[in-house]
Image 1 (cartoon, rainbow, N blue to C red):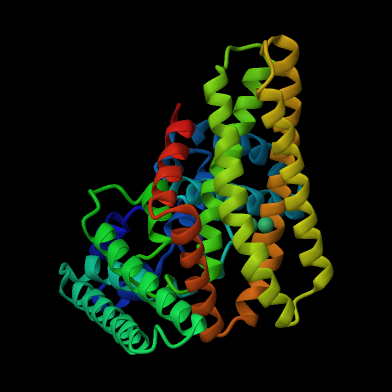
Image 2: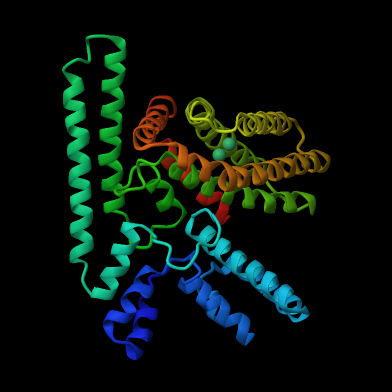
Length: 390
Ligand SMILES: [Fe+2]
Ligand SMILES: [Fe+2]
């Protein structure tokens, strides 16, 4: 989200320092006391949409304009209609804003929700006018995390040749250690303004901070990338249906992204590690079975797309068939991701203790490095960014 500096400056003029610290510093983009909601309420009451546009990418402006017009009409029809319409507008705005950040929308949070130590420290630095505390906090966290991993690798290396199991434990610890150092370095040396889709996605696989060891957070970050590609696929369907030229290579790249990133990487991690652990921890087996069935359905659609893409010629009829297949995939995946984000992940967060979280994150990393290659994520995030921007 945008830094809340402008808000701090505005409020500074009216309030003594001690009173503006907490609400401003704690503000986050999906909370009811955050600056996005504040601007949305201002726009709804004044009829002027301009204050909210800065929170959105230019491409999303038309969506919020449409929502705003609808809401302004509906809210005139009584108190209950106004309440529901306003809620719809706030959710739409925050959803679009978070999508622009590469973050999933997980509902509007009540006022006073703690955004976590990292954002809290980053906001506080703006209020303090100094980065001292935030950089000290980051340095301490990274030092501790590197040291812990280093010691684990060292300890396990002594017994790496005792048995296959001990050898695997050593490899897993080494991969986790090396991956962590690599990604902290990548985050630390990232170009200014790079915390977009690519930056967030990279962070999901090893940035410094408390979120890194949380497998559900990693799943949410991957959903954000897949979700953006699903939105781009919906545009692709529109182009195909309206007879616009879409070359075979572009269609093949969409197909490749979903086969490799969404299915071989993301769904495999869910099916092989996360879902079995959740099942053992008492999660609803019917829900998990349904998710696996949806993965299988998605695989079927992608196989059919692959077959269709291999046909010659790729004429108007073939493009219509592809449009229907991609459309079915978009509908399936939107529903699937929504179900996991809204229903399964909140439940999973309650069921996974720190040890299980650590084991899952390590399993994710080992799968990626050993089966998909060390640059897999970077390559597919870059591909997604290119396809989305095209
Ligand atoms: Fe899934
Ligand atoms: Fe998923």
